[in-house]
Structures are given as C-alpha cells and as structure tokens.
Amino acid sequence: MFGKEADSVGGGGEGSLNSILGPGCKVKGNIELQGTLRIDGDFDGEVKCPETLIIGKSGVVKANVAVKNAVIGGKLLGNIQASNKIELQTGSHVEGDIQTARLVIDEGVFFEGACKMGTQAPGAARPGPEREMGKKELEKQAVK
Image (tube, rainbow, N blue to C red; front, side):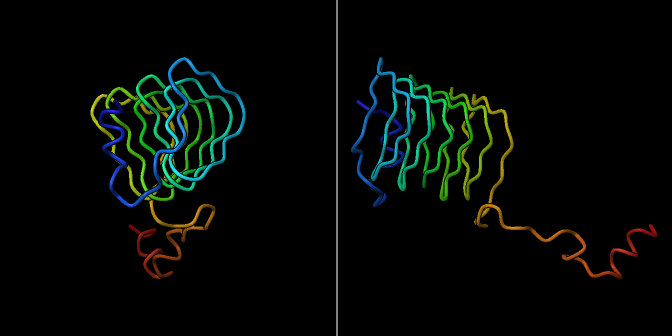
C-alpha cells in the first residue's frame, strides 16, 4: 500500500507509522507528534516530529518542518530541518532551505533553495578562513 516510502523508513528501530493524512484530506495548523507521520493529502502549517515525516507522491505540504528523518516523494514548500537524514525521491518537488546531516537525492528531483549539511548544531558559528589558517598563511595567500 505504501510502496517505496514505507520501505525507506521501516525496520530501522525508528518510530512506528502512527499518523496518516490521506489523499483528499486538507488540513491547516500545527502538528506535533511522536512516531512517524505520513502525508498524502494537503497540509498547510508547521510540523514538528522527533521521528520521521513521509510525504507521499500525492502529498502537498506548505510548512516549515523539524524532524529526525524525512522521505519526500511529493511536494514540499517550506524549510526543512532534519537532524539525521532527508531523502528526496524521484518526482519530488522541494522549494525551501534544507538543513540535515545526510541528504539523498534521486534522479528527477526538483530542488530550489539552500542546503546546509553536517552534524553541527543549528546556528553554531563556523570558523572562518582566518581561524582555519594561521595569520602567516593568509598573508602568503594575499601576496600571491
């Protein structure tokens, strides 16, 4: 019934699929839940989930999203922050910024936005080139 999306998140010790917004369902608001959420309908608002968000092929989500993992097969309009992994499946459409530790992009994906990757905490300052290189190395590069 769920195809590839369910296989992508199953069996890994993650939360069970316990919430579904089915095709034809239209919801506005904020969702905060435990476990895994699958959206095959239309959702407009904000999603906070400590486990996995699955957006099915027919799903349209207009929201800022904060999750552990995301599997996107449909359309996402908004920023997404995933502490572990984001998977953009063939045919998916994402307009917004992505922040995650790991990113998988299949062929045939539309993505427009910025992408930040790594395990660094959000908002933490990254060292600039002057901190990574000593002052003498910067002076040498300036002379070249």
